[in-house]
Structures are given as structure tokens and as C-alpha cells.
Length: 248
Length: 247
Ligand SMILES: Nc1ncnc2c1ncn2[C@@H]1O[C@H](COP(=O)(O)OP(=O)(O)OP(=O)(O)O)[C@@H](O)[C@H]1O
Ligand SMILES: [Mg+2]
Image 1 (cartoon, rainbow over the protein chains, first blue to last red):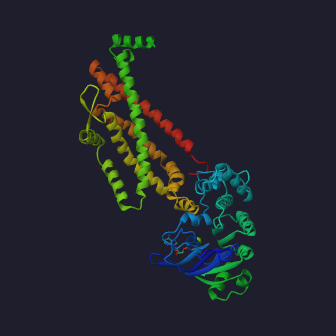
Image 2: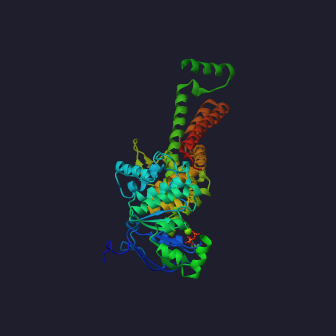
Image 3: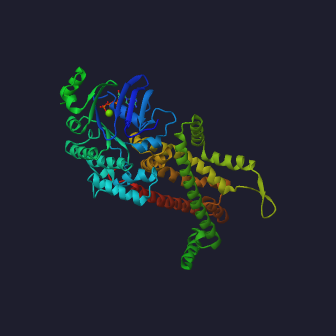
């Protein structure tokens, strides 16, 4: 079966995942179309991080299917490199390489993994650093940048690989309130450029504004989902209602 | 220079303090030769012991049980036995098992001389400690940093070379330098298999001149200066490797 852009870019079917005895995902299914921005929300420990980490094979799954542009992720012979060229990821703790400057952080994967020419990679990296509004910080080390700046470098680093979809795992959760906005703005810009995004977030106002679709997870299942207007106004399930009442 | 040589010759005649390598050309060449041999042996062992440490620590992270077991066995063996016994083992046990080659005088001589055996033995000795040192550094690298590299498509080897090792290296530099200083001091063991290093040559000189006291004082000061230079070089290196805003 050949994938076409009319098919879901990411498609999860009945995904089950446990850590030893602990069942974390209990049959999750969802589809993400090209250009979609979806937000996954839910209480702590409900399996949100695990869910998106399964998409780029940082976690393996026990049962079910995850297709990324038609490539099956739940496959012992998975070509991880091929998958990770398509799927970018941004982490809560930024996870920049502390011994490399901002510019080097952004350039490194294209040079090492995509075997890009250094000069070309540097040109692209400088453009990306401008795009995330960090011009002038090219030669700063991560330890010399604020949390928000580091996170924007991490976004640029992910973009440098020209992924088709980016996973964001609570990327503003470790930031000071003042710097949350600048990172969210960067993501909003990406979404407007048509980047496919899967976000785990606690920023409800943001989710409401940028998401095409919201998924609410609890104890390893998707309890309820829908476009933001209906989701936030007409939540049906009592668990969703309770969660929203606590957070809004 | 002649002036200095004369001064030490006079010193000997007037006071009996005998430092022949400072006025006698033959003894001077012996001492310089010993000094250079010590430096060369140290450099060779530093280099190979660090290589062993880097490769050993990589193999310890292998998914093959037997690879890990062999590396651990090597570490235990070389950490828990005296380095002098190791040296004798290599030189006398393994050295005599190897085939011999004909030398220039038509006699039979071993393939590897005493210098080579000292280099091998001491590299393995210091290497065993270096594996442990590098492993502790690797364990100190946050898993999340490695995951970020994985998510970017880096291969296992690329992650080790570009991320884990450079970060681990900075963490372990003080411990590594400590071990390397120890290694330089341990090169004196090569004396036992007649490698013409500094201690050995000093011994030759005091046998000929009966000036044990002077040679001992000189040796002590010479090693003190040598290791001092090494330590200050390493301290400078530690500072140069520091990442702004990190650690
Ligand atoms: N590597 C792991 N080994 C064992 N258990 C794990 C592991 N990672 C996560 N878990 C467990 O899986 C469950 C789901 O964790 P997960 O991180 O996916 O939750 P989350 O929804 O992202 O929570 P949060 O909002 O706090 O980030 C938790 O109970 C957690 O303790
Ligand atoms: Mg999480």
C-alpha cells in the first residue's frame, strides 16, 4: 500500500503499551492529516508523553499499529533513520547538546545524519535561527541562554531536519511564564506555515487557538475528542468535564 | 655550558657531591636517554590507555552479554593484580611463548623488546582504570540528551562519538588526569625488565660512581618536576575544555 498525501500522515490503530506490569496505553487510535495541528491534553500520568514517544519509536509498543506516511513503526525491522527523518521532536527539557553552540546544535544533525554540505547546513541553520527570532545568539552555548531561548533553538534544531511532522511534549512546561509566550508564538508560526504538529500541552488557551483537533486522554485511552469549539463548549464525558473545570 | 660542567666537576672535587651526568659526557647521555625513554614510554602508554578506555567503555554498553563479560573480566584482572606482576607476566610468560627472530649478530632475539612489553603491559594496566572512568562519565550523561540525538536520527556510534563521549570526557577529566599521572609514575616499573628509562639509567650511573644519595635526590626532584609539568598542563586543559554556562 502506497501512502499518498490524502491518507493520514500519522495513523494510530489500537495502540497498546505497558511498562512491565503497568498498562499505560490501552488501545489508542487517532489520525493526523497533513497540515493538521492536534493537541493532546489530559491529567498527569495519563500516558500523553508515552503516546507521542511511540510515534517516533523512542518507546516501543506491544500491540497495534502506528503508520507514519505509510511506514509501520511497530515492526522489528523498522528503519529508524527513515522514520526519524520524517518525525521531529521537541522535549519539555529542551535537551540541547550543552557542548555545542546554538548554531552547532542546529547544524549538527543535517551534517551528520543527512550528510549535508557544511556550508549549506550552516546557511540553513542561520536562517532557522532567524526564524525563531534568535539572531545574534548563534554562538551562545545552551548554558548561556534562557529557557525560552533554548527551547526555540530546540525547535530550530528539529526544523533543520525538514521533518514532515513534529512532536511537541509539553514544551512550555519548564518555562517561566514570561517566556512561554515567545515559544508558543514560534509554534503558532509553524502551524500557520502548514507544519503538521502533534502537541501535548497544558496551555488550554493556546490549544483552543491553534489546534484543529483536541484529544483528551485519561488512563491510557482517548476519552473524548473533537474540534476545539465543540470540545471546550460541549464536553460530554464527566472525566473531561472534571478535568476542564480544574484547569480552566 | 663548559662553565657549568666545570662548576659541577669542581663541586665534586671540593665537597664530594658527585653529579657525574652534569660534567661527564657519557653519563650525561645516559641520563638524557633515560629521560627521553621515560617521556616516550609515558606518551605511548597515555595514548593507548585512553584508546583502551574509550573502546572498552563503548563495548561495556554492548547488547552482547559476552562482550560485556570479557570487558569486565579484563578490568577485574588488571585492577586486582600488581602492575609489576603483570609486567613480568607479559615479558616472561607471553614474551617467551612468541617466536624469535634472527638478529643482526646471527643470534636469536625476541620479536618484542622490553620497551614494547612495558608499553603493552602498562597501557593495559592504566586502560583498565580508564574504562571504569569513562563508564562513570557516560553514566553521568543525561538519558534525555541521548534521546534528543536519537530523535534526530543519530546512529548509536554517532551518539557515542559526538554526544556521549565529549560530555563524559569533560566530567571525567579530573579522574582521568589523576590516573594518567599515576601511569607516568608507574613507568618506573619498566626498570624491572631493563627498559633504559630514567630510574634504570640512574641506577647504571650510581653503580659506576657510587653516588647513590645524590642520584636518589636527583631522581626524586626530576620526577617531581616532570609530574608537576604534566599536572599543570592537564589543569590548563581542564579549564580549556570547560563549556560556558555548563557544569
Ligand atoms: N520508562 C518508563 N518506565 C516505567 N514507567 C514509565 C516510564 N515512562 C513512563 N512511565 C509511566 O507511565 C505512565 C504514563 O507516563 P507519561 O509520562 O506518558 O504520562 P504523561 O501523561 O505524559 O504525564 P505528565 O503530564 O506528568 O507528563 C506513568 O505512570 C509513568 O510513571
Ligand atoms: Mg509527559
